[in-house]
Length: 209
Image (cartoon, rainbow, N blue to C red; front, top):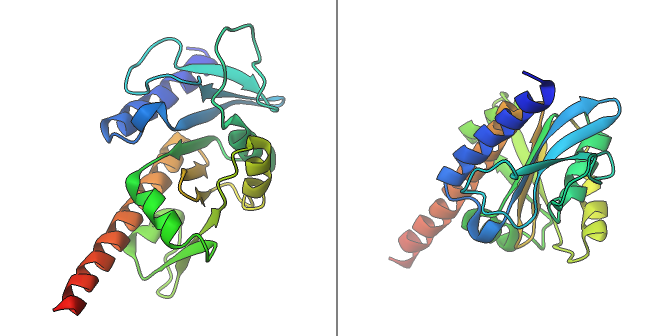
């Protein structure tokens, strides 16, 4: 099996799992996986596809600038430039972007603060934070309609081979060393968001009594 096919299959598996969670409403979301390091090439989801379906046109190969690396009628996802920043600024091997109700609500609640911090939560260990007083900070950036401008805001937070950034009222982008790691980080973030919102809701009920 070629490296390209191997990476395709890895990304298809991730897409299938996330689709089963209904994390791609309205054709939203985009995924990518690095294929070659030098020069950089990566597979990215094609624009406008229903990601709950699985076809030979789910992904296309692009170069380090996000331009198709081979002849194709497909268009890269509108937010391919975010994946470009990940691969040009880190050694990450996979980047995932999804829209969920929970990550949108959290991004709006804490958007003015520019970040949300989780402390004392078991799931931050997914990011390698094991100390008793460890914390996970997830930046929140404005949802610029202009994608190059959005990519510039996003790139300021790509400082390691793993990470997560919320885009206000838009979604979350996570990246990791490989597909398994990136999915792990995404699942951890979504758990933390869901837990936090449920806790806030229960506290408000208790205080109202």
